[in-house]
Length: 109
Image (cartoon, rainbow, N blue to C red; front, side, top):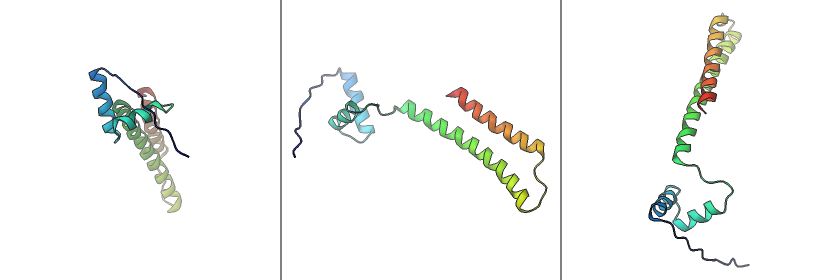
C-alpha cells in the first residue's frame, strides 16, 4: 500500500515564517515536518515560556518532596534505632514548611 504525498502551499508573512523556521529548528525538524506535526495534532508543542514554567514547577515539587522525605526519615530513624523521635514541634514545623511550599506552588501556578 502506497501513501500519496500531497502539497500544501503556505504564504506566511516574513515574521511568521522566521518563527516557524525557529520552532522547527528548536524541535529538530525541517519546516515541512514541523508543519505536519503541528497541523495534524490536537495539541500544540509547548512554548519556551511554558517549558520554563514547567521547570519552576518541578523545582517546587522537588522542594516539597525533599521536605517530606526529611520528615519521614526522621520518624523512621527513631523507630528503627529506638532513639528519641523528633519533637512534635520539629515535625509540625517540617509539615508546616511542606504545606507552605505546596501552597506557594498552588498560588504561583
